[in-house]
Amino acid sequence: MNITRLDGDRFEIRANRDELRAISNSLNEICNGVHIADFEFQARLSVERCELKTLLSQIHFALTAPDESGIRH
Image 1 (spheres, helix red, strand yellow):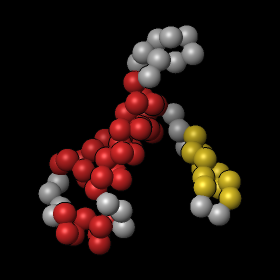
Image 2 (cartoon, one colour):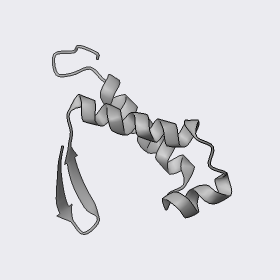
Image 3 (cartoon, rainbow, N blue to C red):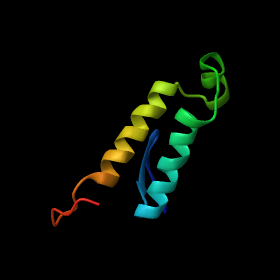
Image 4 (cartoon, rainbow, N blue to C red):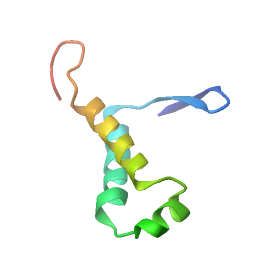
């Protein structure tokens, strides 16, 4: 994985499929597996659950989208 700071609050992350899948699995476990009460979620993770679920969806889409050759993984 390679992470580059573009400017103040923006970063570019380059990850291979296995790294992205690990991030996806971790986010899925946090969002849907272990129970963290809604009132605690923001305080403990510094992000709303719905924001993490959106990020999880974006990563899932990236992992399942066809590559340049049109092959869906």
